Length: 194
Image 1 (cartoon, rainbow, N blue to C red):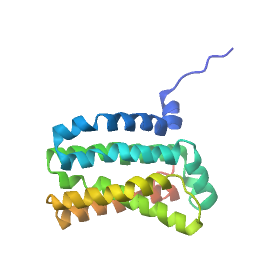
Image 2: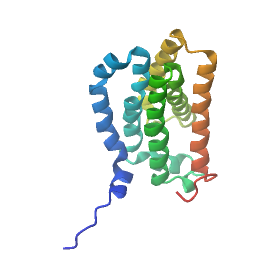
Image 3: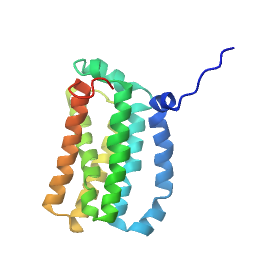
Image 4: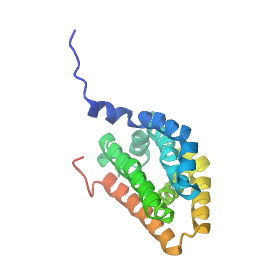
């Protein structure tokens, strides 16, 4: 019987969204402690990492996200790979939301608005796909149930706490730019070799 060589990179490629589900639940379980330590405004930014991890699980755990794109958007599919999905989701969401949290905590909460705006933009893309193809797309349920009301609440609460129009414009701009980069990745305009 041959012994298979374990490689963490292979495991991560196929299981990152499942690992994210476990991590997301753990982050939600310690959320009351975070709230006590950082206050409401920063706490709202903190919540976006576990919220987005739940969304990523719905999108990617069953391996249907890439298959859906191959079927519904074949013009993008030749350049969209599991490795690209891993890179985009871990860098943009896991690392990006962590940066947003640190900036919100260390500088001021309003500078973390990119996290809820990214979720908001993503939710409207899911809704657009629903309207376009009249069928479920991976990630739709969490986008509707968590992203739209949660982002609306977070943006409203941070605006009431002092976030300016410029802060909101910066958050929205980062979110839109991130999605433009996602599509450029998928179209093969950048990162073709990933």
